[in-house]
Amino acid sequence: MTTLLADDLFRFYHVGDEETRALRGVSLHVQSGELVAIMGPSGSGKSTLLACLAGLDDPDGGHVEVSGQRLTRRPEAERARLRGRKVGVLLQAENLMPHLSVLENVLLPMRLAGTVDATFAQALLAQVGLSERHQHLPGQLSGGELARAGLAVALAAKPDLLLADEPTAEVDTGTEARLFEVLDAFRTRGGAVLISTHSPALAARADRVLHLKDGILNG
Ligand SMILES: Nc1ncnc2c1ncn2[C@@H]1O[C@H](COP(=O)(O)OP(=O)(O)OP(=O)(O)O)[C@@H](O)[C@H]1O
Image 1 (cartoon, rainbow, N blue to C red):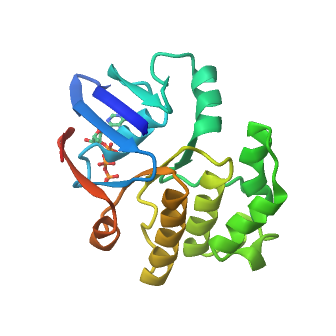
Image 2 (image 1 turned 30 degrees about the vertical axis):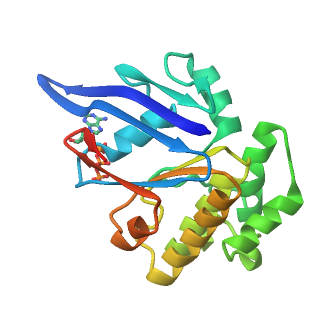
């Protein structure tokens, strides 16, 4: 089953007289149970692409479907509702609320989706190795712990699709291996995963690697 479908995405930025063509006709798909990695140099458009796929940004052209539902060209409130139910998002900016404990952060997407499952929240924290830290505030965690907590939050509402922008940036190899195990478990349960990464080790474990350069994707 195709969980993520992107067709002919274009995204242009304008700053003064300057136009940056960040995405130039990007099409891709990710199946249920598949982990796809996107690699590309800095500025190639990876973050722009993930923001469009998550419905956080609306592309200038093309369309995105998640689990058969169109995400593009919809009011922001509808995109947010669909994202809350279907898509776990882990972008470069942290997805943790600073005044909430790690456990409360994991429970928050469940509350928003209307399906609070405290047992599943604890299981996710155990998977990312943060059971002992569940009462800590994000400001009391290390960088690697923050990355792991962010992944638990992204998976909390049991999404069909996980979109993660460099999920293992700035973590040690032990943490990267642990994060991969969590992604792998999600994939095994039928989740679809799309990550951007600069890590050859992580890309080597993906089912497919796509290369983005100057806003154009090559398989
Ligand atoms: N809000 C914006 N306004 C104008 N230009 C932007 C904006 N966001 C990104 N760009 C430009 O669009 C291009 C693609 O940026 P993007 O952040 O998607 O690349 P990236 O591949 O994620 O880079 P990195 O690996 O460094 O995070 C770059 O040339 C960038 O300067």
